Image (cartoon, rainbow, N blue to C red; front, side):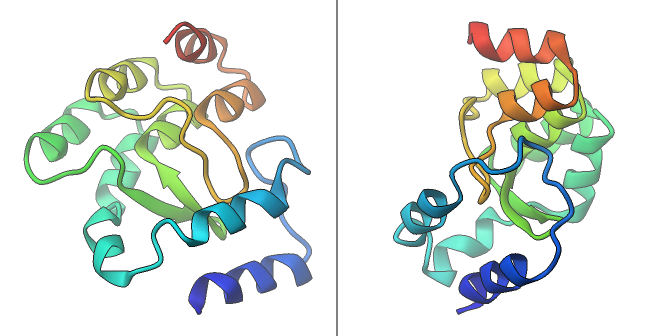
Length: 140
């Protein structure tokens, strides 16, 4: 399917370095995910709209909060540079938006959700030097 194709493409192309430390759990993450959300029916409502993805990257907590208060899902994901499984939490942490990370934790976001490369919000925050966000995630 599409996911395997993307994985193939990622292996053969010279990869741009991921947000997280390179060489983390590549083999295990794809296999454990496949059985997880393989049906298109469950995947559709969990796609993160581009404008919400952008709002999270910009740290616009109000926009994200309004979306979540409506039909938004805190566990919705999007693809970022060929890496799938990016949650609002990962985006917020990677950009160092402490307020948004706090909001997402309150809304029940998984602090340790991983993307398809096995990267967590904590790893993303640490890799980008966002110490306050990393500390908050560690305390959670």
